[in-house]
Length: 360
Image: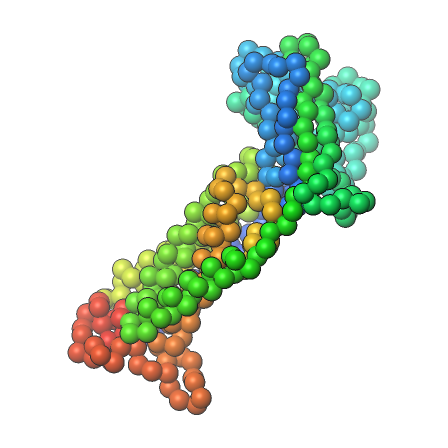
């Protein structure tokens, strides 16, 4: 296959794969998302050994973990049995509890079906094993469409409670919901811009080589950030696989550009690098709100998440720009863009292909 046809084929395949990923539907519709609110568990009263509670995704899910040998029942909104954590680690949910249905989404918009009755005998279904389960408990987050009246970020808080029984003993999980101050996105945007400028300056002599390296680093950063958000989400929460799949596609494309450059030539490198940079740039643009939203659903420190997102975007845009400029795709003032590497016209092989010294 000729160099041109191979490059075109790579571009088409990469584009088709990316479109397929973007069309993929998540397993559910309400995964954790960046938020202005943070909810935390303050205590379990009375203290219960082997029972641990926490909030996942800022204020999205209440997660309960119960060690084997203990039995815990979580009360619904009308005091009815909603969840049961059995001594063998099985977690069951009461199909007759209204909470079973309104807890399926973050906004609680679902209408309980006919036959739902908080006063009826529980009808249990198994929903998990291993003694851990997370759910949208509407007692732990703000349910209004806007901010609470008179609420000031950094000052407004609201206590919450969730009643449980531990081996028949009435117990209460207590916590606090807080409205958090926003984040200034300017430093993070500046970081991304600085990275893009640095790559552009470093790549003046060998733009295609710099572009491939920048695309690889951007995809690796995006993959790490996406994986951290993916792993923080509870099982079955509907977190999108695109968080990891899109950076991985970019990493593969840029890796192929570097590995196969000696065999397939400049056009292949150009197409693959552009595909990798586009994947990361699209990923970063779709989650740009993390730069100004204070509470992020990730196991990473929020600053690391924002830095990885900003750097990934800056490097990806720089990589795409270097490819366009260095390959002569862009026109500047009606003239062909400068050659990729005027000082290395006689280089051959992989270095010439990637660095732009190949004048074919």
